[in-house]
Length: 398
Image (cartoon, rainbow, N blue to C red; front, side):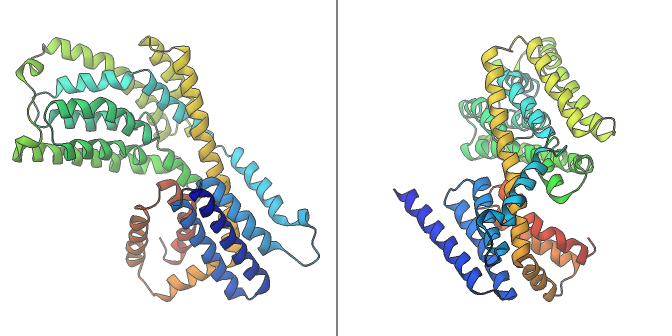
């Protein structure tokens, strides 16, 4: 009942905005109504409405009003043609083709318990390092991030694997949770990140260059996490107690065998996928196909590929890929309507009137994105706000 009232109120607010648009054709007022549309999408997302369909709904409602001409037949409004063209353009985008393949690669590796084996071998190999379980968690998250472009799977899996182990060892709850969430979010930055694919398609930037540019910062961030954990464990050993001697004293040969069977096959797959992309041997879509096929081979080699796991991986891949594809459609429709109403021009005029330097503009944009990161997901920020900032880059020669 509460959700229905929210939905009714949101619909009424949208209709009122459209009526104002039809009654007041002044260009400045249209620009302000574009800003109202931007505000409505944020409110709708905070209320829990599906992002993709809310973007499409608002884009079509406001677009219908923006394109409307007196005496025009309902179905003759160009917004319907725009919707069809945007959908076709996204579904035939070669860059988007790599999304389901990378996602399938990640889900299959997760379902085949390959990461479980990796974590346990790293846990034994790093047993003598201060905060060894936390360090092993970060390293595992980093490796898993290079095998999948999704964040939720990493955080969920490591929450099930690493959190109980750290709590049993007497680790601080805050440190344990922080390690998992921070390490899990590395999947956003480290290739093959779905976020980078989405950003590349939105900004019309080469995904290969984005991958090459994001790899080192992602690994550097993981390294800084490890340094921080070790330093905290050395300063205050109570936060991350050492493992019992019985768990540390494992024969070196056994540890080496576990590492060889868990790290090397996965590392070879990751190197083949990312290396071929960065070296320019394969496109992201071709490398993603190799990665998906390699994940199947790994699951077969570990004797973990069952029909149920394969079916579940395909289902999760289809669901995630559909979400990404419709986000593309909704964001492009929303952005074109926002620009048509004059909202984009109004924002550009306001930013230029501030007379900022390029560095000041970058700081302002980062601050805005940082604040938006509290209530919104990265998907909403990219598909809604990145198209607003991008046209301003040319003005500041960035």
